[in-house]
Image (cartoon, rainbow, N blue to C red; front, side, top):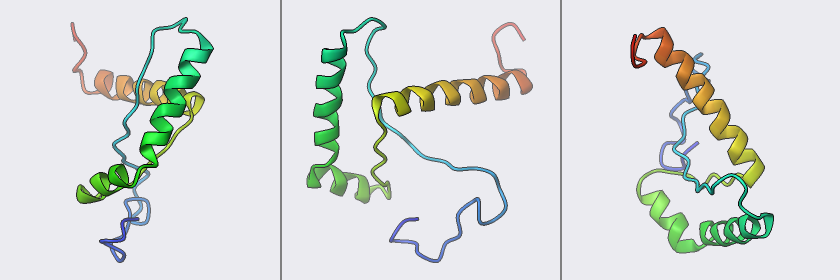
Length: 96
């Protein structure tokens, strides 16, 4: 919940099974050495903790949303799966 809108109900509180966010993430090619993945992960996590980054998010009513490499991978895969189902349902896929 945003501090700016403490009394605004969330979509879930209104009865909709929706949680919307705008995550940022980086990817690397499959097979990237684990030490490189860790170095990138650690650098971006540190950057996300910088007060200037948190302040920039706040200007746009966004909250920091840290996910580990494994959690972000799962989030991305789940999101692609859900959106593919929706695209197919709406007939928006190429060749539909």
